[in-house]
Each structure stands twice: as C-alpha cells, then as structure tokens.
Length: 221
Image (cartoon, rainbow, N blue to C red):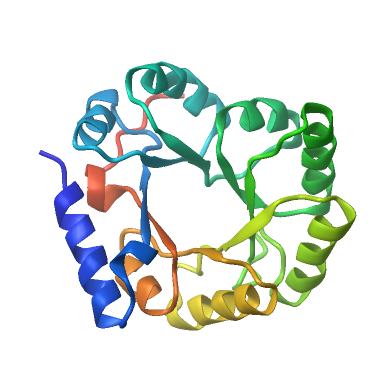
C-alpha cells in the first residue's frame, strides 16, 4: 500500500490553505534507489510524474517501465555530468539541475544537433553552500538570460534545495522572487519534510520520495 493518496491529499490541503488551486501543484515522485515493486505500485495507482537523481540508474529501469505504462513524464533532479548529457536528453522530459555555464553549452550543442531539448530548470544554490551545486542567487538572472537569449535553451523552471540546517521559508521566498523576475513559470521546491511549506510559498512542483515510497534501500556499490 503506497502513500500516494495521503501525499496528494496533503498537497491539495496545503494548496487550498494557501488560497491556490490544488491543480497548480504537481507531485514529482522521487523514485531514486527504490525497489521496482514500489515504483510499479505508484504507477498502478495512476501516477505518471517521477524524478530520478542519476542517469545510469534511470536508464536501468525506465525504458522498460515506459513500455508498460503510457504517459510517464520523467525529470532528472540530480546533478548532471557533461559526459551524460546525451543519454539524459534521450531519457528525460525535463532536466532540473542546470547549474553551470559549461553544462548549458553542452546541452545547447546537443539540442542543436538533434533539433529538440528537454524542458530545463535552473538550479539555484539559495544558501550559497560551497558543497552544493547551483547558480548563486545574485548570478541567477544573468545566467537565465544567457541560457535563453544566447543559447536558445527552453528554461521554463527554477529549482532549489534549501540548506538542511536552516528554516526553508526564506529560501523558498528567494526562489519565488527569482522566478517572478525572470518570467519563469515552474518553481520546483519542497521535499518530504517541507513540501507543504513550499506550496505556501509558491511551489508548482514538489519532490517527494521517502514520505511517498518509504525509506530508501540503497544497494551496495
């Protein structure tokens, strides 16, 4: 028995409390390091929007699942190495971790060659954490403009992971402000512990893993 109905109910309640249409918030089921049976259970309940952190892991399960389940939409929410751009663009409908100029150039080159590109979200390092990927907040406007205007990239969204040891609200507000300034329609923020707060601050998609599937069970290696 999955927690899908419970999570959807909580999303709807949070949206209504914030005076928003519940349909304006989408649930990204974070299926990284989850047993296939748990993913299939969510698919069997009709959910079709999923997020994966690693290209190689996603390659190992989603081509087959897509053959069996129509209408799957897959988002890459983890870091993307430049040498994995081609397989990522083959597999994912959206890449939420556009976090540096070199990666943008690589995606733009590949998009030009194939004549198509996944939807892109710029990852912002709202806490300016040295160990975390993402564009710094004061560089986000220029980076988004460069991606759109110089590289013709379809930047439709913005994403962040607030620092674990800080209240998330200021980071959610900062991300929403950057999105509004740049005419970005999609705001991906909020995870299992804080997605209801993220919805109150404008999230259009929330990334929920453990609260939906249960604790992760990483394999050796």
